[in-house]
Amino acid sequence: MKRILITGGAGFLGSHLSEKLLNEGNEVLCVDNFYTGSRKNIHHLLDDKNFELLRHDVTHPLFVEVDQIYNLACPASPIHYQFDPVQTTKTSVLGAINMLGLAKRLKIPILQASTSEVYGDPEVHPQPESYRGNVNTIGPRACYDEGKRCAETLFFDYYRQHDLDIKIIRIFNTYGPNMNPQDGRVVSNFIMQALRGEDITIYGDGKQTRSFCYVSDLIDGMVKMMNSEPGFTGPVNIGNPKEFTMLELAEQIIDLTGSKSKLIFHDLPEDDPMQRKPIIELAKNKLGWEPEIQLQEGLRSTIDYFRNLKD
Image (tube, rainbow, N blue to C red; front, side):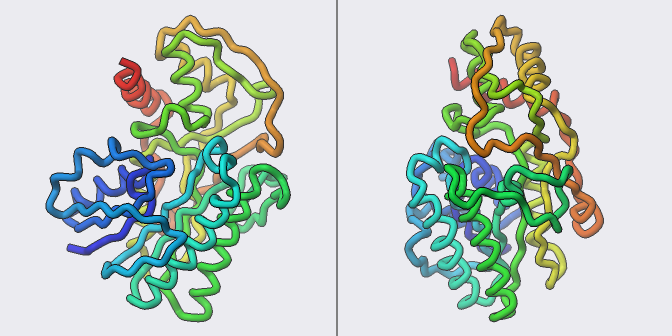
């Protein structure tokens, strides 16, 4: 049994990670300031004797005794991270500094949940881990993109300077139960609009592409990365390499929900990437990981989750 700290543990990904680690027989210390996390995501875990919840903001130091750290804390949807962009950057940068300091003191492994946003609007497609990105440092998305890039820098500086056992994954679009229906992400937007019978909002011409990874696959990759061989730092792309246009996604959701929603088109937001697709050969070779849940199957369970919320 390990005692494992998850920052952002009440969020979409953190709540699924908490449940998986508990099911594997570990103790979980869930830390969240509930800016975007939700108590309902972890309510069913509160009676578990191996689960502990601590309300805390990672921009402040934390003094606890644990065996591993998963650093997930940061708002991840544009609506939330652009609402308070200064705080978003602080969460990524100061949060990384504080968690790295804790890992250094305890001499324990620490995993950083980075993002495909570090690639920006990529000029290389699909994206390998070696691609350095095409990011606008002064745009409205920079608070998140650059915050995560700086966090990666800090992780590698702690690795080089202090020989810290670091792990970095770059997460591509992930969806599934426990998503916030108001988070502004494309899957939750489309599903909620379809369930309400509203017009589905497509930005641009709808031909921009994303690859969608179901949450259980993502969490499996995250845990495999944490428990990979010492010295294997990453970064490693974790995502589903099957690519879909926004129009294809909308059509699948309309079909699966039986909605009569129509498509309406709006201008593309500034710096919104046109393509996003991971190369996952490193994850396959080093972690023995690749996604198993295909889009239609994952959308069904996600739609069921949102349908129950709606009711």
